[in-house]
Image (cartoon, rainbow, N blue to C red; front, side):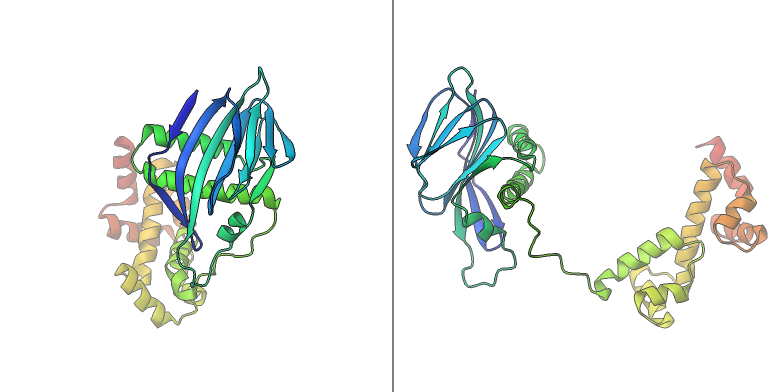
Length: 288
């Protein structure tokens, strides 16, 4: 079997380097691949699914068994030979690289970690087989968004390759922490999601690092509602769910939602839904 995609313009960027994928192939290697090498900025990733054989790199010979992964970079002469009767099944990805902004300060070392390795061979420990199988499915089926998915899978393949020959080394770069301003929306959403029964304006303001008046203005800017209106929405949404999908008593629901009394809850519920909690439960149980 031989499947090849070599007429596609697939490009993706890592750090300051543009990766162009010129050939993607899957082959049962009954033939001998004679010694050959690739030009400047050209790299080939091979993954052997099954079968056995050898790869000759210069004067050295390496045995290939299932799950062998190897990388051949620029000017690395290599030949690949299957064992008779047990041919290798081989995935091959051919890449050509180009720096996109030589003068720009790098924010990511991944491209350098990849390009500085001209040859590596070993057993895959990063589930590259799954990535390659998904890559070929996407190229075959061409479902909505497959071009984005293919580029993402190829980027993932580069990371998996690097992780294989680095052997679990920790990353040098990390995500920057969000600033308090960037995290404000999330803090508010989390607070109302988990603490809506008992949340106070003062508590929310403290989490945001703001004063109460600033917090109220922020609520108006984001939601067009006051703190109490937002809290009321959360409580009433929870109340409607509990009334519809549970057999809990109204007094128990009122207590869980942080109301001081069942009367206080009932009044708030009637004002919000224009009907009593009992009537709401009856109508929604009859028509789920």
